[in-house]
Image (cartoon, rainbow, N blue to C red; front, top):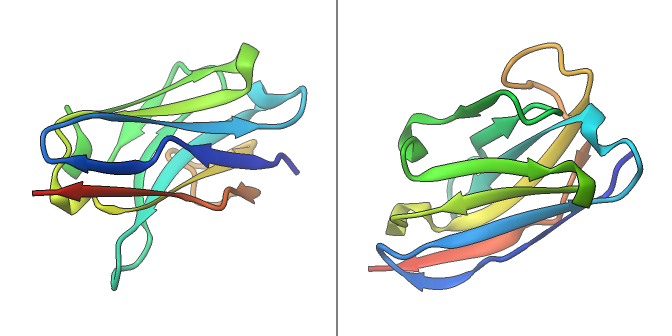
Length: 123
């Protein structure tokens, strides 16, 4: 299975931006659809955004539409999550997950998960 490593989290003020990266191993990264999830303290893990293997299709949860952008650079085996206009409610650990041959859109099942990167947004 592909191995995923998230990076780019940090502590920022509301209204600022962060770009998270999800770096993957392997030569067949373009075969994987990749999603970002987040989990805030005391809450269940929440889907944030998904991108197809080619990058041609994306999907966002309503709370981040217009603020977050998921993208990928398959030559670099990396998926990004550009987060703008951050709000305190965006505070969470952000995880990326990958799946080959996704059967649904957005994917419902994933083959690999990263360990997460902490995003904290102060008011």
